[in-house]
Image (cartoon, rainbow over all chains, first blue to last red; front, top):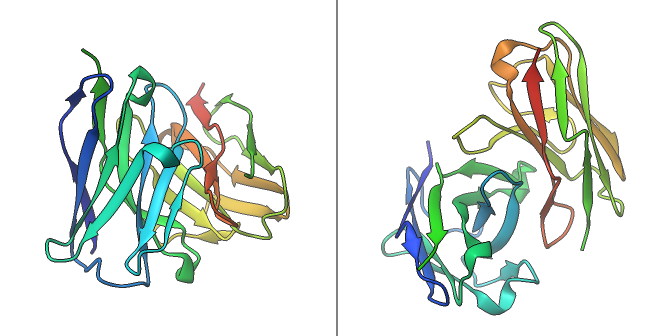
Length: 121
Length: 107
């Protein structure tokens, strides 16, 4: 059973870059059957989709975040990462990594447990 | 971008009640609509995809319906374990977008 696990600093200073990694177990990211991405949830608020990327490099972004977001896939480590630049308090959220399986129709079918990131000096 | 309007924001019902949550899309999604259940402190869990297909292991009291711009999630007989927030997701086109969530409380 494929599983996802986020890791990264829980505290980031304003205007610095948030960096998170998602480790994938029980399956390979080296496939274009799925795409890999990130969703976040500010405290007490709803879910916000951020970005998805396929192994062939095709990437989709939330337009309002596109200028600050980088996603990369590392097939040698079977993990993918998110970088969000120039963070502010509005970027404080639980960040989830996700697997997207459109071919089955199952959308975002696997989620990591989530990691809380607080932006504060 | 497609906007998803979800209602109600909060729902309080008794065990055994039938409850319905609605999502409306700003443009047609065909049937590319999913529902997620999120219990406090947990990640969202896929309940239903392509509007009405139950994910494996999801109890049959959950059902989904709709097409185009109007969709609903129904719990036929609310159980204590259903206390959670429910989210809809459109995946007809990028960027993906979620509804604002419905918190289900047990009276």
